[in-house]
Image 1 (cartoon, rainbow, N blue to C red):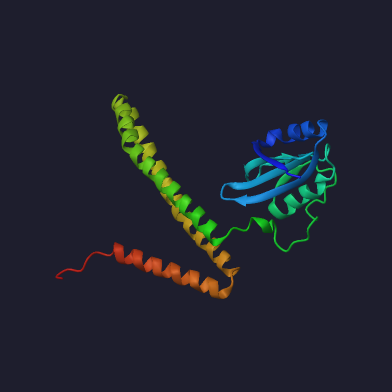
Image 2 (cartoon, one colour):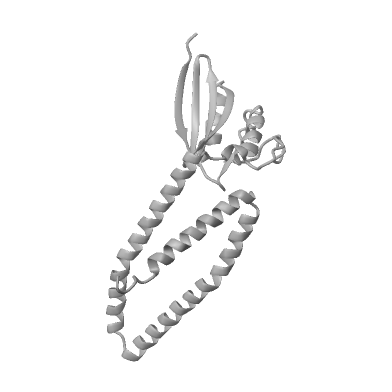
Length: 227
């Protein structure tokens, strides 16, 4: 017997409608499958009738997003939904038989969302590219914004313009002071993280940080005279 498999996508808001429709038309629920991806977690629902299998996927579910339970239509789904919650961290609302996170007694939360070194490297690269792009856009926008502000100030009463400039300078100084105060707390947070690491790994991280500081200091230092 040959089976025909179909693959479709839907949004989280379509999950209940899809389950209700398949129930009404005599389909049976087969499984709920989660897959960890670069963009989040794909949640796939599989239904079967006669020789046809339909796979409906909610793509790239993020942390904090909720999906409704389909146990009002297919009670057997409670096993898969509890598993999806405990192993992948999927927030499924209204499970008929809800184990409240104790369906699997695991040593770490959401063990199936651990990413591979290659995935980690790809995410870090994407984050760096996004940060560089945002910084460039901000730098490109700054001159135009400054010119627009100066044009507005030039059209103001001189005394009022002077007050605006003074307020802006005070704000900039306040922001700089706040940044300086935040630095020690960031160092403390880093030390707390290092303290929780494997000692050998923490030592490597510290060594890498010291080497980075040395390189930055060397770049900032003025070139020697008389060379």
